[in-house]
Image 1: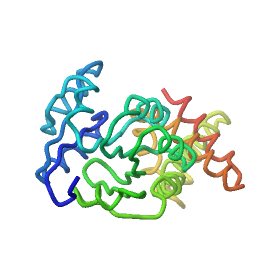
Image 2: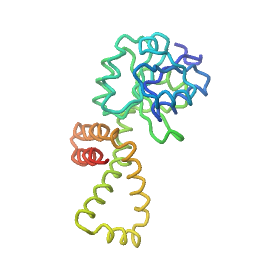
Image 3: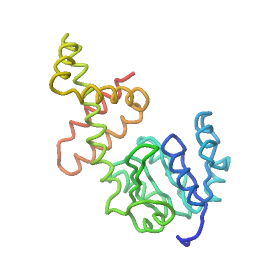
Image 4: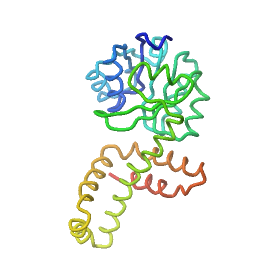
Length: 243
């Protein structure tokens, strides 16, 4: 697959981040497909807004695409890859998974690129590693690193881990009857925490269910390197509790 030429790329499955990636790749001139079978009306709407073409089924998507980019909740990454054991193009797993899970996925698909997404749908950065990373990076704006999944784990360990921590602190203060007093003290000494708490609450309401698996992947990464993993096991539990 010549990296300098236009290719056909499939996105699995276009949530907010996946749709943003699909739109970015499409703006580079590539044809971008997705598969609507079994997907929700919200997913169909996002794909339409991003200008993605519907291939219908995963089998047709696999047949027509040169590259597949998987963007799904962390807990589903391995199962999604199992649908593409015979895919002969490049499979990019751009999910928030541990290096160990990335190696598992690399053993499932024939041609694998490890990817990590950092940022928001409106301002995202993509990091890639693996034998075919340079080919994929040539298709759109991405950065080559030595271990994309590890970089994603380290980054999210802070951003999402501290979101869980401030939610836990909120709950502790409320349980002990000092919630208002803590907020008053924050106003005096840590005013930035008001915005941080509000942001954590918004994110937990809309995305917390997705972050449970991500925190567990981060915890596994810490444990694999002989570091305490309890921080992010607890973070997973906090997101599991959020309504």
